[in-house]
Length: 350
Image 1 (tube, rainbow, N blue to C red):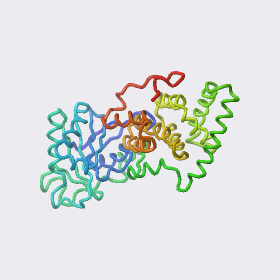
Image 2 (image 1 turned 90 degrees about the vertical axis):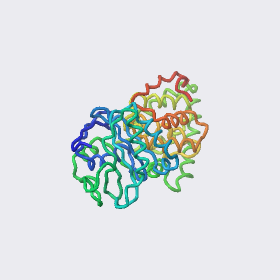
Image 3 (image 1 turned 30 degrees about the vertical axis):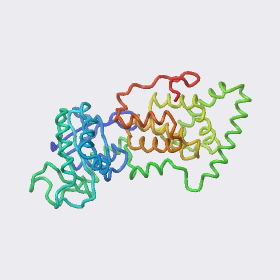
């Protein structure tokens, strides 16, 4: 890897933030911010086209080891064609490299497979206990048997990632916990939702049918989205929005809003609603959170959310579609935006 590399990454507000990386150590500091979680026990590929990060792919090490050679070749297929260069990182639990770096055989298979697809491998790194080694470093070269530290906590690269709003959760379990209702809150939440259902029936009757109610509730989502980052949304309003998402036309309008701009307020709102819902109401805010996270390039958060949604409802078609996109490694920046929903939720409805 060159001693000084710069790349560009999409910031969470939709802007493009430039993060300058000086060597492998600083790159490794930034990787968790690009993923959104700490990648322990993972193989990560950072793919670049020119000076811009085009994709970042994470796979569990155990999954690749179990799959053998076909698994490493498939990983190269997911990367090849979209990028010109790549950096491979293996995150493991071996505290040093004195006994030889783990997964060297798989790294060799992946390197060869990437080369056949025209992807130049800038470096292949092994990370454990806050230190790194290079698979391509010769004995006595850049690493040494004790490895090298993963960056300086005061590095400009790390500061740039934080300025871009790229946050890091501990692991996928932390993402799931972040979306789950507080412990012991289910009975209280269910009471709020039951009251919201009763209010829904009354409002539909008072407003002259489902059509006028849908128009009214659309404005409530806009207001909640504007307020969620800076102020609290009441329990009654939260429960009302959760119940409203059960109506597919309302859900589709929310989906359409995300397609118009997957900014932080929508991610925060869907997280808030998922944390204040119980079965069977959780599936829609979980799906919307997953779709928003995916559109923002937060692949791990999207995977966790869609897995939670499918656990709530294995037949949920929209979540199933998102799961297929994630399995296929579809790039959210190149997939065309979905069409606007029709008044009855037609084109987006699923």
